[in-house]
Length: 395
Image 1 (cartoon, helix red, strand yellow):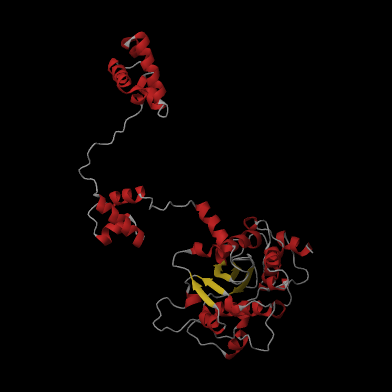
Image 2 (cartoon, rainbow, N blue to C red):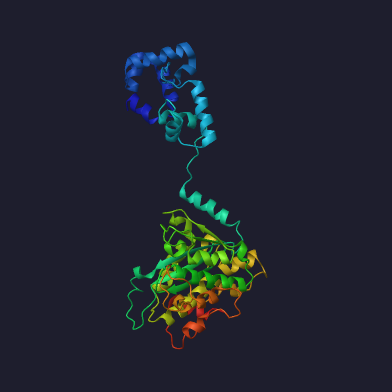
């Protein structure tokens, strides 16, 4: 093999190759060394001359950087770039535009990289691991994510060959720390139903001793949560009004950032795969019964491998032993339309007195249950399959 090919393949060990060449030249001569190494005599003379002048140090690679850089950034400008970076945390392009720097963004990047001021981008798995560690600092029921799922995109569920129409929307809440999930259903997706779900959920949590003032509810910027995005009046939506009266903090994620609600979005995928795609749902009452059974299975028995293979019930018992009754994880799903008196179509219609009475935590009226709206969690004779049958057999 030719010398230059060997040199390219031995980039980390080119020094040994040159030592061997010099030894051959000393023993057999320059021409014999060139023939054996399959290179030119000029190359052999070059390394032999360097060895005679500098010894073994002369056989090392020399820097190929130019001796002069007439367009190199002056030291005072480099110091200014570093100072601006530390102060504003801007990138190279914005530093050039906003601060009027006379060098290119590439030159600015080189200065920042040499100064160690470029933050290395973390891989996705590392970000997820850091996010899990941050979520571990939360207390149970300190932060809950809310979202709405359109069930019409599930072919096994919608449309269903049923004489009774099934609700199209699923309102979901999931506790970030424990992973516990709560669901309700509705035929319409608007602020009225979102407010009814928030009232139903918070009423249940308050009954089991959850401090609502320390609770944070996180949603996206859907009109069911914040009203019309271009509304002119500062009046809060019905959903926001319910949280304000209960002194619950409402947090909104940035637009087009659905990953910020990843916990509740993950549950949407899970319940689609394990309930809606495997169970036969013919009526709203059957939907409520099987959804309640699945929710009991999910909150009390289903292991989550990203949470040390623990169920929400086990996590809650570990973090707050004897603080919460297990019934806090057993909120029956309901059909939210039963909360409301028609006509009550949307955000533009004021709340009815009956709705305010149902939403009030101070009302002596008992909160609605699944027995009130569906006639029982699971009616006699209901066919159970998959996870539903397993959960009913579990203790």
